[in-house]
Length: 448
Ligand SMILES: Cc1ncc(COP(=O)(O)O)c(C=O)c1O
Image (cartoon, rainbow, N blue to C red; front, side, top):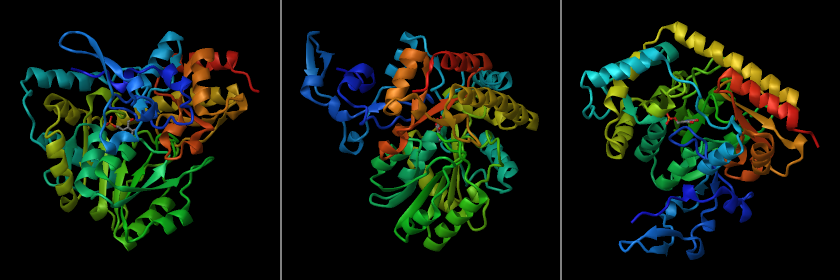
C-alpha cells in the first residue's frame, strides 16, 4: 500500500488553510528545484488523510505518518507551484536549474563510460580518476595540495556531502551555527542529526555578517559553523574580512567549518575564497562542492567533500551507509568535466554575466529594489513596491496575474517573517526566456 506523497496535495488547498504565514521551507530539492512547504499539521489529521488502495481496491483513508525529527518540516508544494506555473503559462524564473543543457564533451564522456562497461558499483569513496581530478581542481582553486585517496570523498551531489558531513561529524545536542537565509537541506539534515541550531540572520542590502552577533554566539559549545559562499539565495559572497573573523573565532573556540561552495565558479563581482585556504583552517574545514551548477548538469548529482583525514573518516563512515557509492559512469564523466580547459570557465562566466545583466536591468526597470548579487545565478529583490502582503502572496500573484515564477524567500529562514519582503529570481535560463519574463513584468506589474 502506498500513501500519496505530501507533495501531491494541492497548493491552493494549503493556501486556503491560511498557511501563507506558515509556509517554511523549500529546499532546492535533489532536482535542484526550490520547493515550498506547508505546515505538516495541515495534512496530518484523519480529515486530511489521503485515499489509498487496499487489496480489495477500496479507498481507505490513512493518516500521513512521519518521524518526529522531520515533523516540523513542511509539505513540499514545489510540484504544485510548477503545476500552477504550467496552468497559467508562467515563465519559470524560480527553478534553480538551467533550462539549457550541459556541454557535449561531458555528455559524450558519460555515454562512452556506459559503453565501456563502467556500470557496476564504484569504489565507495569515489572512482580513483575522479578523486584525482577533484584534487587537481582543488589545487588550482585553493592552492591546497590534498591526498585524493585520503581526503576526497565522492558523494551523490553536494546534498549528500552535506548529509554525510553532518551525520558523520555532529552529535545529537551539538551546537551548529547557520547563516539565514539558508539552503534548506541544512536545517532538515541538522534536525535529523538532532543538532542544536543557532541562526544568525544576514540582512539586506548587503547581507553582511553581523560580526558582533557572531562573536557573542560562537563559544566553546559550538561544534561547527556552516558557510555557503557564493550564497543561495542572496548571491552574497563572504568577504576576506568576514572569513578571517570567522576563521579566528573557529580557531579560538576549536570549531569546525563546513563550506558549501557549489556556486564557486559563478563568482562575478569578486574572487571566490576557499575557507580551507586561510591559515590554520584546512585542518578544521570540510569543503563541499558538486558538478551540477558549474556544468549545467544538475540532474547528475555528483558531489564531493574535501577534508583532512581525521574529518574525512566521519564523512566517509556516514557516506558508506547513506549511499555507499555514487553512479559509476557519471563519476567517470565528471573526471573529464573537471579537467575542462580554463576557457570553459571563462565562457561560463561570460554567458552568465550577460544573462544577469538582462535580468537585473529588467527587474530594476520593472520597479523592484534589486539587491546586489556578487555570485550564484540568483538575485533577490524587494517586492513591496507592488503592494502584496508578503512574499508568498506576491509569488502567487506573479504566477497567476503576470505569468512569471519567482521564489518566496521566507522559505529560507528559521523565522519566515525575516524574508517576507524578499523574493528570489534566477537567471539560469536562456536569454529569450529572461527577456520574455521581463517584458511580461514590465507590461503587467503595476506599483501600488
Ligand atoms: C547552496 C546549495 N547547496 C547545495 C545544493 C545541492 O547541490 P547538489 O545538486 O549537488 O546536491 C544546492 C542546489 O540548489 C544549493 O543551492
